[in-house]
Length: 165
Image (cartoon, rainbow, N blue to C red; front, side, top):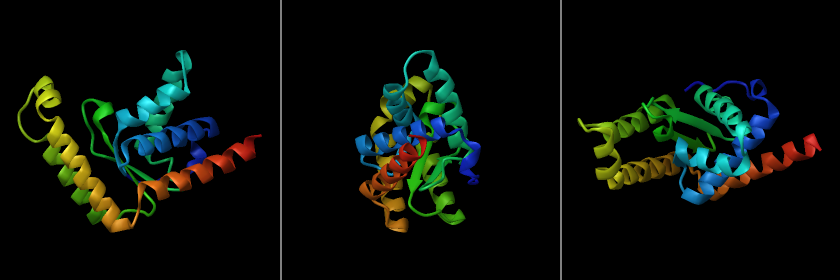
């Protein structure tokens, strides 16, 4: 969960990653996403064989916390299926105790002895409720709103685009 320097991520990956995150935030209207939401948005930006290379680098950057600026991006815990991993986006750095609370709530979502098929089909409403609870906590703790975060990302994307053109 440690945040690292953004200059370790190639500009192209950073640009595509921030675009995909901004789009996923808009679509879900939530500060808490599943990695699959970001991946779905990325698939619309990158096509063919290039997608797999970009997605692998983006996933690594998210895991390492390397896409921090201008917002903080956290991956909670580890899931067997990376698409189900929780990604939290905030305008300020979350404290250790806040991250621990989110980790515990995320653990509720994974609790129980269920097969993967049972988890996917029977617990959709519970997973949605857990994400909504986490979203509301991040919003309460940080004063972040989805539109604020998207605006910050768009400003950074504009700056990056001007820098590369």
